[in-house]
Amino acid sequence: MKKILFLALMLPFAAYAAVGHVKLDKAPIDYGDAVSIQRGARVFVNYCLNCHSAQYMRYNGLMALGLTEQQIRDNLLFGPGKVGDTMTVATRAGDAKEWFGVVPPDLSVIARSRGADWLYTYLRSYYRDDETATGWNNLVFPNVGMPHVLWELQGQQMLEVKEEDGPHGKHSVTTLVLDQPGTLSANEYNRLAADLVNYLVFMGEPQRASRVRIGYMVLIAVGVLFVLFYLLKREYWKDVH
Image (cartoon, rainbow, N blue to C red):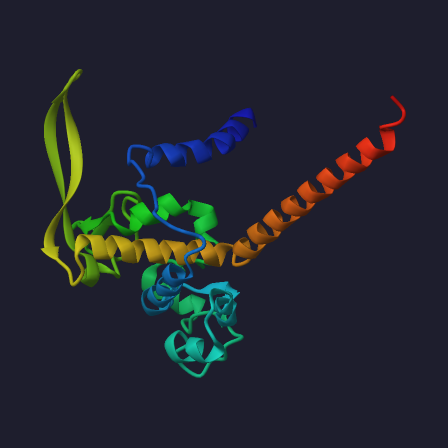
């Protein structure tokens, strides 16, 4: 029983160690950049929503970014759905499991689960691998089951391993090299990945901006009350001493 408990406690650390050798890049996201989040929503709807649902997010939740219902209907809602519907996929779970071997996970809170830096690095770490079923692999998520759906934009990367001299002898250095360019430049694709991650972060907590704004207002109100109460205290006690 003690061994089972120990393994259960150490499992998350073992999972972290499995990808710990990959240095995560800092995701250049901005929670207050509504335009970036809008672009990310467009990427999500066009490339991710075909297989991955976001059942805890409604289309009209994007109105918090300044979009109107008509803009959402014209640019982000495809098919006969309504603006108040959740972001679900038409594929049945049974069919998805038969086709892909596993049901693609819901992405509503993937940014809160994985973290923005992990997602940003993951989206930029795909490379060609003929030994996998899909022909793709990923440095951050080895033997990932999902193919690189953005490869036409980024291009095809190849894994390159070099031997370099170090203070403790030779060691292997793994890098990704662009073998075939895509329709976007490296900077353009990095910005697209950042926009997508920005949207995924927003989707995980759509009310974050409002919550932060209310928090600042509360702090300001508490500060004003503190000053007023301090002045009142001085006025009340000035004759006592």
